[in-house]
Length: 100
Image (cartoon, rainbow, N blue to C red; front, side, top):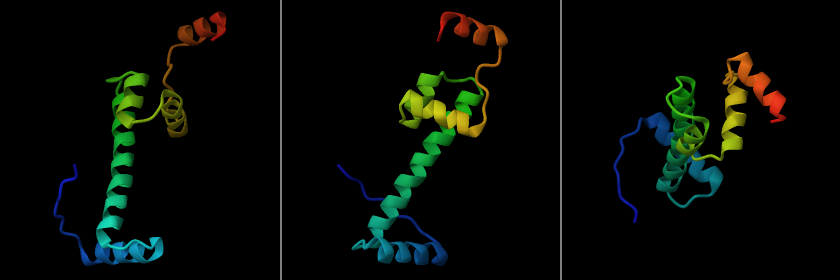
């Protein structure tokens, strides 16, 4: 079930949505707004999950779930960000010894 929300936007944002409607061949501005909102929420989920993961408040799998990604894609996102998430040498050595 969908719900209706009302949002006020600046003239600049409205103009960009109108351009998006034209370029994406949408029928209505609301379609463009929904797409922008979905993209923004996707990015927000990733940023939130990365922030919580970097603060060590969630595990890798929990971060992936919060970001609505699989664990492998979330670990790639962590790597792209440049976060070193195994900080202690003993953990790396243990995993290497186990062949992981």
